[in-house]
Length: 233
Image (cartoon, rainbow, N blue to C red; front, top):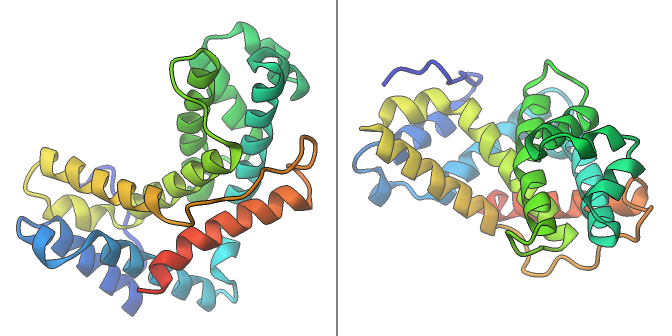
């Protein structure tokens, strides 16, 4: 199929294990021999190895992502309290209330994630736009509203899924027998990540506390709980 959108991850032992499990998972017989959790678990282990080599813990690789999650939680909280337009005004972005929904969510994501070069930034912006569409759809009644902690979990799981696809993309795409099977395989990975973590996430920070310690602690705990599911395999 070609790998024009794929990115090669590092070639250390843990990354070779991760790429190998991705290849077996996406191959025609992979569904029965390699589970979705194994692919994600191997990937998390590879990320952890890279962090250790750089004298960083795993969470440090998601610092920008966690800050973006704080902004998402705060904005969704304001939308629930006072509406989409007022929430944009509180961000100093009142002009976006006159823009199309797609332009508004893109503008918000760009405003919250100013770094344009890193993989983490690119993935965070893409994941933010998907979650902000959900916030807007809930505001207009097209979708049911979810709590801010649940929205944060959705965002963090989406980031992890997209990071995995970027880093293991070459292995995943090369092994898939066709585009249909490839997209089905990615959908299973995303579903597993979206289900990870505790069933209850607790109460959201009060309005005005999302950008402070309370918001940082909640976001970090949600991410820890998602990662822990796959670290314990």
